[in-house]
Length: 349
Image (cartoon, rainbow, N blue to C red; front, side, top):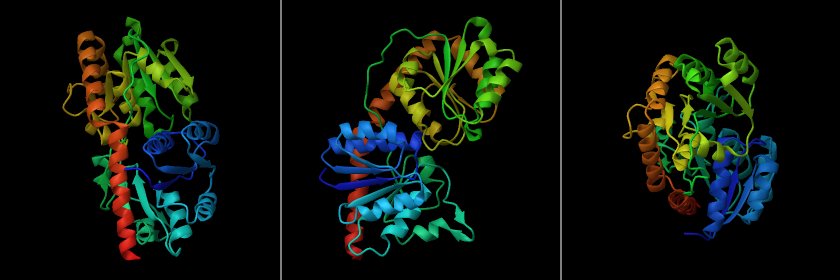
């Protein structure tokens, strides 16, 4: 393992789950001996930590910018790892007719097939260029309509910064409609836990923030709900919180849930997508029917009133993360997919 020249490509100037995935993986690959370059992602939040790990970075907020950056790296990559459909398309245009081109591996982050551009299915467009597909979970692999290899996202183990957990229910996600943060706010209000001294903390930015704050006040929990905006200290928030509430029903894996498991923070999550993969077989209570605030509230009440149960659940989650979802395992699994794609590309050539 190690010794490959890897380029990660994502059309983005943001810093959400996919960008964090790329940052962690690229850094770990460099540490394993690969030469790595990243195209795309939030420049301010990506460039410095990548540079510290010896990883180059090129900004790319538009598909044409990804395309140009890929062309500029001609002859300097063994494999291009694309993330999301726009980067797949950029790789097709930049590399399809390039002689001696690198292998292309597409990481699938979402439990859905690629979309269309007019009448053209993107799966058909990329088929001749993408040499291998990699899914971050079994839920994604079962939904994309393509053959792929499952390589789970992974994290390094870390020690929590606090040994004292507060009466805080934490929600950490983008405030977009698909994340169903309104279900989390409604569930907190229905639970009645505010009267018992519990607080709701919502970390994240997005177009729904104002409506969610209004909703909290209308439901009578405005004084107990804190909307924190974008935070760089989410791990510390997780170390102090008592419960993570993950309301999104369409997570490919659920990086925030995985980070909570790393912290030993008990998780309550929508019973769908990658959440099932992460939490199945542990305490059966934390998974609730998606989009059902009443069900989520019932689970909140049960776990909030069971301090010992929360401690056992957090310990079991942490043990699972350290055993099954490590960055070392992710690097090894990804390396195997890369090498298979490289061999496939060479055989075709």
